[in-house]
Length: 304
Image (spheres, rainbow, N blue to C red):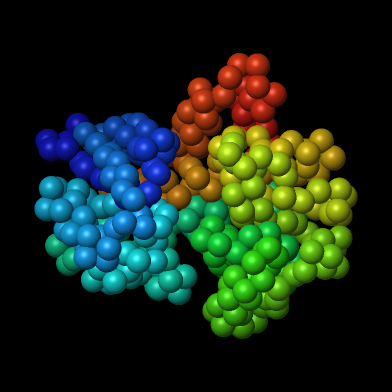
């Protein structure tokens, strides 16, 4: 073990029940570190920019090596950093702040985590086709998933969101970043629903407090895939319905574990075991689910 504690923190609103600390602490210790992960749960609306800057300075002064940042601070934190890595700058969002002697640097591991989940899924999107993709959701998670899809080579990306202005804003940003691709807003009855190679779901629909599927997978091609971002519960109604229809579905654990792996690598300089981190996340999620709940799958690694 290391001679001194390796301290990291999570900063956000309503993060008291986050599984990120447990993922980080277990993997950090398996990497040989005396790893400690603190949670700073604050009321975002009541936190001024001055308070946010003070929180970051306090965490650094207390010896933290970095801070994972979540809602509602992913954009607001940028004003308090010394530099951004290239991808965080292009995305305009930060979910990891790393403290070094050179200052505070902002990174975004949401998009790399999603990219990793697509790359590592057996029989997943990279094997089943990624030329034409429809994305449902244009919020913070949607910005990361869209960036990952285009980085992986999607030639056509349609973005659908109930908030048309938000969809247009994401489309404009992505089109500027990836001029060789066709990026456009997709309507509720767009032809992409029936023709896309796959669909990425990046809205809160499906979470325990917001149950249900955001769309019917039977609208899709018979060989289309679905990638879910929601991971609590692990088996959302969308994932269950998609698999029942015979289509491939990736659950949201891949993105959640992937961003943790990439954050750990940046923070520690060591190489986490991605499969081990994801298995631990699935175990933590299984503990949350009652034994009789139909969403629970022992081992819960089936098809994604």
